[in-house]
Length: 612
Ligand SMILES: O=C([O-])CC(=O)C(=O)O
Ligand SMILES: [Mg+2]
Image 1 (tube, rainbow, N blue to C red):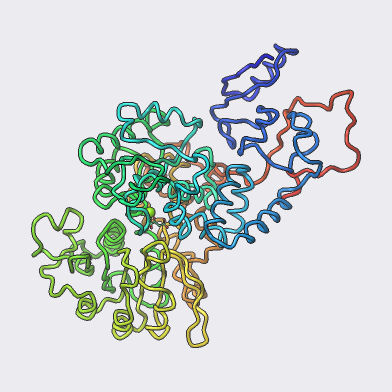
Image 2 (image 1 turned 135 degrees about the horizontal axis):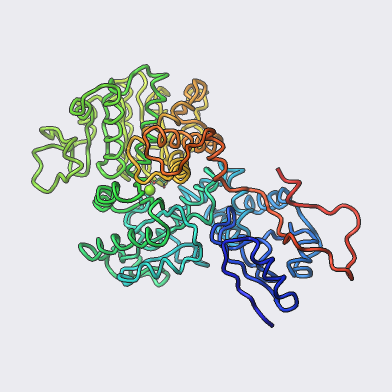
């Protein structure tokens, strides 16, 4: 048997190779560098069993007879031929039969691993049902149990022991056209704390939404964990833990690893590769954002993405509450990445309404584990980003007392302190506001500062409520309230697509302000009257596309796009970057029915044609 491996950028080369070696080749592996949809592997070029085993090419029973013949998989599948729609029907049935969310998660992982197109089609078509599984809240549980459910690697693990060789590790990733990376070091996974390398579920889940919500092509996405150990004692003792069993490496060595990683990404994939930081510990999140934001194409989702979605909700609330941003008083519980990120973007939004920075900052109060942020704190207890929100004195360490004293119109929980917005806190909010605005942002659902039901019950149904993770609709006084999900998932997929399409080098806060405006404009009076501060989840894909178009327009307006000429039709450009959720034909152009073979009679189902 002779194997010819073709390394080429051109689709024509395998054809030419076949002509040059008409008798000999048993199969040809065509490695394409810039294939628009499939990435490294091109349909039709991987034959036999290997074709079925490659999730990017596998269509299960949807292969036509011609494809089965030409790919050498005839007989490897039963006779039935199914359309993509029929397959989806079966998947929905299988999905719904699992009672436990973790089992549903594992089902989705296995589907992803078997048939990529079917996985993404299922996810994108039924986002309301699937998102709580592949994303928050279930993804949090999946990270906690990652060692137990681990089957096959789905991303890249870079450990502290790889220092000096990170580029070589990156080169082991098989795709050559990566445009977006989501990276975590697992130190602060959602509100669940340090989950070490098992935090991989987060980059995987975020990138699944890149594709399902914004249509970023899966082969252009790379999930990465930086494994420098974990301080999670339980994991260190757990035989199922999958990461390095050592305490976290910190300090210079850790920083040098991240520096090396950033440089290796640029060397391997180019300076326009988007790097989204996710779920790093508080200090590192700010440190790396400050260090890299003007030298790499990067953003921190927990700081900037979450900020955009909260600002969007507040912009939308103006229609019903009738207060501009600067007419609010904001009280935060928590002073971490999300809280400071939100506060900074609120200040930016007020500034663009003409309010000076210091006056905007005065409208923001922050309360953390040690009480209200105040200048009287000891040195070192009020690091960099917190200082601008510190008041002169901390009158009390009791949160309820602070609520009573400040009388905020907006209460924002980003503290991972489940239940901290108790009955008294919520009643106080209701006493001092006609329409109190309550954000319980901590994830997953069990970490929320209050439930949706509590928010409505204790504010006499007058509040406008949003949470980071989903809550089911709430009944109050015979009225049903659908609560909005103030989750950065409304923002990061669209921003990523816009950044990729325009070739922006550095991502400014204004891009997130732009994204917030787009989301806010999509909230209708009807949504607001139902209690929604966000467009319904069913429109999140449309939202992502509009954000991407908004980012593109902004990039050309400000001269920060690097892909020229400027497209006249921005939406068309965005669409041209998107993944197709339909099967493609797997027939090589040159394939003909062999002479000694009977062609099938009658009509044969063609899964490429009869799905929508
Ligand atoms: O992942 C989510 O659902 C939102 C988020 O970034 C976080 O909580 O860290
Ligand atoms: Mg996060």
